[in-house]
Structures are given as structure tokens and as C-alpha cells.
Length: 148
Image (cartoon, rainbow, N blue to C red):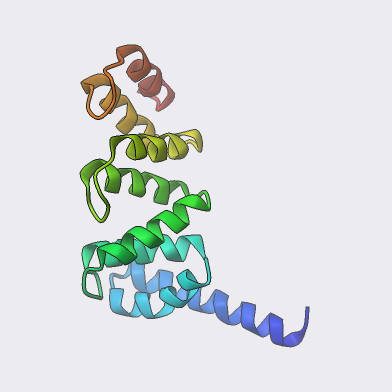
């Protein structure tokens, strides 16, 4: 690796760390300045955090189209929390057209990675027959898998 490449990676790591620190301390406009360029370059964690900021108007004006695009990009890279978030977007019709089948698809992908929140969300959906056919056995299986 050339010294120039090493410097670029080091700068990206510093920007990512600074962006996450700003996000965690709720300084969202600064977080967006650090994380948005990384999100544009395809960093799944940066995409997920930027999606949250755009969805909720944190440090910027609300931008549902950008929120959905970043959440989808992170989810497609296998980011479990983004998959869960995308499932909620589809379930609630936030930033995207409401689509129960898409919601379930993304909750299942996150649940397959062990995300307990997605397991319990799916279990509740199957228990209530909300956006999926009622399936008490599948609900119980998922609750058990989630540790309940």
C-alpha cells in the first residue's frame, strides 16, 4: 500500500470516528459533515447513521428520499440494524411506500443475523396477523428464538 493510500484510509478512519462521536453526542450537523462523504463512498455504517439523520431531520432538513436510499444501501450490504430500520420504513410507510411483504423480507434478513428486535417484531406480526397471515406457531418459534 502506498503512503498516499495509507493516508487516505487513515483520514477516512478519522472522519468515521469523528462522525460517530458527533452522532453519539447528538451533534448531528457535525456528524453529517463527517459521515455523508463516507456514506457516498459506500460505508454501510455511515449510510445507516445518515439515513437516520435524514429521516428525522437531525442536523439537516428531513429528506425522505435520501433516508430511504441510504437505509436501502446499508441494508443491501448486510447491515442488520439498517435491515431492521428498512423493515420499519416499509411497515409504517415512512420514507417509502408501505409494503408489508418488503417489511417482512427485511425483518427476516435482520433476524437471520440474530437481531433480537427483528425476531420479536416478526413474532408480533405473526401473532397479530398484521401485514402477514396470522401464524401463532411461527410467532412462538420466533419469540423463543429471541429468548422469550
